[in-house]
Each structure stands twice: as structure tokens, then as C-alpha cells.
Image (cartoon, rainbow over all chains, first blue to last red; front, top):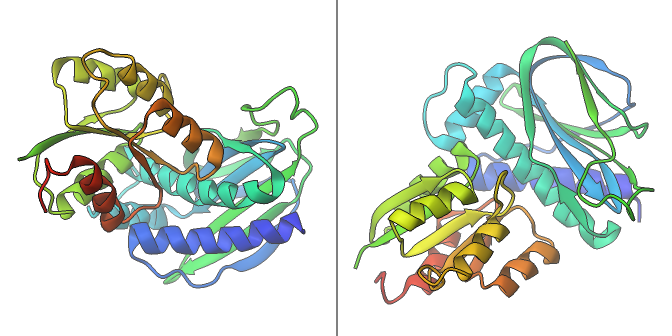
Length: 175
Length: 129
């Protein structure tokens, strides 16, 4: 069992399934990229969800404001022209569904895992950083010219016997 | 006979989606009420009992499992069927919900057909096709 391959395969199938079922969109296959824990500049909408249990880490989605609006419009079947509460809520829910599906897939291999409630950030020129040292497994999806990045970092949780529901890794935000 | 349904989810997006999906099912629905968490749901149910509660599991303040336990402990509301909606496909929370008396569960992402299949089975014969 290669956990990284499991994560990549699961992100790919989960994103495709959620987009197909909830947005009515057939998402093309994602493109793999590996990232270290170092911060990198972000613009747009980024969401995070903590994962904890026998393994711990973070799942994340990021996209442009335009794509976030498009996701919201498709999900709620209303026209969203600017990032507002509905758009952030839609991105949070999409994160919850995709990372939640990945979590379910991984549980049969890695043991019980829990999810936090998602957090969504919208802004310009901010940096995000995971306190963990694990590399991110990332897939980028192209939706008719818009780019969606779905990524996850996950590592064995040495504190699993003490902490079951609080993510051992945290994400810092630098604006 | 038309039914009243209460949708409980901290995500306004999911509440809107469920409103739309429930209308799409073609079931005889009189009203769809909304609550953002378990506490809000209990307050609403105290005033307006419904025929079915559709609730998320992971919510702040009072989660879906706590809401389910409270309903099952209530002399007035213990017969109200509760269907859980969850991203939690693992056995633990679903098994806990079933043990607490949930009438069923639906996994996110869901289609209108999946929602209809689950709800018709529970509300029949109150909701004829």
C-alpha cells in the first residue's frame, strides 16, 4: 500500500464524482504535482479541512474568484457574480464533500479518521503553510480554462492515542 | 397527504440544494423548514413538529447525532423519523446513528433520486408517489 498513491487516486475519483453528481460537470483527469510544506503566494479562494485520527493532516481546495463563483452558480443554480457568503459556503461544502470522500476511501487502509469543519479564505497575496513537514499530494483540474487545485498532506499521527478529533497539523495564514 | 420536512445543516449552500432537490423529487411536500444546527432544530420542532427531519451530522453547537439522541429522548418527538446526511462514509458515525434510531442515511454527494428513494421508503404511505 502506497498512501500517496491512494490519496492521489482518491482525490481524482472523489473530485470527479462530486463535480458530476452535484454540479453536473464532467471534470477532466487531474494533473499530479508534488509540493513541499513551504509557503507559496496565493490569490483567490482557498479552503482547508483538518483530518485527524490514526493519520493526521489537512485537505485543501484553491481556485480563482471566478471559478469559485462558477462553482457556486452551478451548485446552487443561481447566478453568482462576486465572492460573497454563498460563494464561500459553496466552496466550503465542495471541500467537505471531496475531502470527506477521500477520507472515507482512506479509512479502509489507514484506520478511523475524523474531519474538522472547513475554513475558507478569500483574498490577495496571502501565504498558507502547514505546520507539518509532509509533502502535499496535489492534483490540478482544468474546468474549461479555470484551474482547481485539490491537495492533501497526511502523515501517521504519533499522538493518535491521545488526540482523536483535533488535527495535529495546523495551517498558518500570512497576509 | 402532504408532509412537512425539516432540513438541518450548518451550510446554507446545502440547505438551498436540499430545498431544490426535495422539490425536484415530485413528492407531496407542504413545507420545507430550515435550521442551521441541532439547537435551532430543537427550538423549531418544539413549535412546529414535522413529518421528517433530514440532518447533517457534522455541525457546530449541536451535531446531528446529538440532535437525533435528543429527539429520541423526547416524549413528543421520538417518533419523528430522522435521516442523516453525511460525508462520513465510515462505519463509526453511521453505526452510531443507526444505534440511536436513525431511519436511514444519505451520503454526500447525493442526487435527487437518492434522496427520493430514501424518503419515500420512510414516509410511505404518507407520501404517495
